[in-house]
Image (cartoon, rainbow, N blue to C red; front, side, top):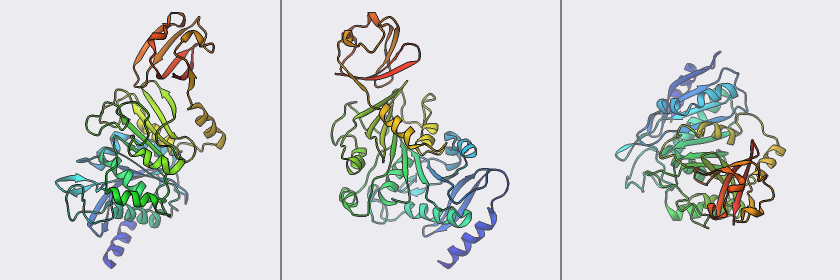
Length: 365
């Protein structure tokens, strides 16, 4: 234990903050041996309340390469927050984070009796940041892709309230069912805000709403958190973009949402959906968001309930052209509103572009 303390202070002497942004690899000593991570610090002076974002790469990945793929450093420089990119170690037969949710040594999911403890590794990095930069760690967030997204859920279960929100991408949660249920029922556990981003065409980690229909207790693991947070066991609100839909499980705080990206597979982004930017916005790392703005955003998520008979759509100008996009981002109609037939629309959620720049999200019943 003494040697670990000496090593930590040695690293501290190497990274005393200087003028200009820095991106470098660092190493710390943990109970599992030496571990490494990449750290980005912005040019602007770090304050006590500076936010910290942990970004976990996927199985077989590399922390430095993942930093280039995601592009968080650019946002951190312009918005003054710290980014930490942990490097995974060998767990079982590959380089991955230990994401199995339980309280036992090793990784029971892989049948590995002894391996690294990435919860402990994360706590060691947090301790180091607090000592080195005197940040209070009141604004700590996590995101990650694939296995890194699974790691986010492990943090949400076992390192709350240290982590204030997570944004897993192309991921899910696995672990000991008994332990997970006991954790959720325990007095000290509280759900946190979640933005889960997932490609509907993901063939590696199955999209969590595979039938594209809200059903209670089926969209795992989001319903586990939403039921504890707001009593919801499926999603009830919609906010559509071109090519993606945000499904709201809990639209008040804590906000728990799923973003389904229509043409995206098992990737960070399909080149169109701005995954990194949306995560920065969700964590409020780009700019302070007023209570009024948050309320307006929540209200805009609820779709307009309409009948399938388009002749009853008095809210739309029938003399204009419209473009209608379905829930997975496919354009199903472009043309005159007058020519739109009721048979074109099955029951479901649609984004309708009309009257120039106007957009309406509708739930056809």
